[in-house]
Image (cartoon, rainbow, N blue to C red):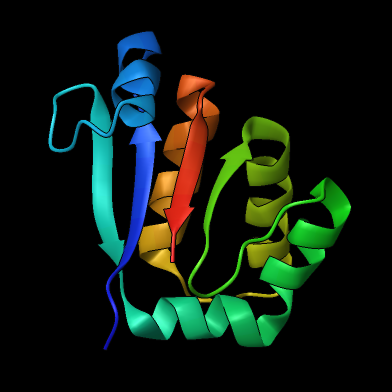
Length: 106
């Protein structure tokens, strides 16, 4: 099983920390997305839809930064399709609340 990391900067310093590869700091929220959540997002087509809409590559073996607009769209699609991904939802909501981004390192 592959670890799939989600990182959300909590402030401007957190964005800088992410850019410089600083991990585990107080300025970022970091978590591992369970394999079943990645599979649910992948099989539901949500990752492909958001990638296409925002010209991103949110896919396996890729790292992608997803801005607030794309995070809002992804969260809306998750809710509309009733996809059970609590870890991803929490990180998306946090990115939206903080006005930063969510980094998918899949």
